[in-house]
Length: 76
Image (cartoon, rainbow, N blue to C red; front, side, top):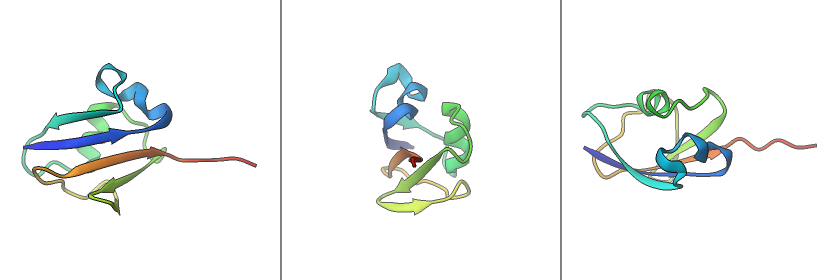
């Protein structure tokens, strides 16, 4: 299956070729945690949206889903 990924901010360094938008081929039943591991993303350092809805690491993605990965924002 294929999932379209949009990745922003300093998380782009984990994307293939540093691209902000790309497609990933995954096995059926893959979860956000599987994607996080594959991209070597630091745990708890980003927010994930699947098809516009916030999702946790145990959420399974489906063929054609859009995954958006946003860095956490901090400031003072």
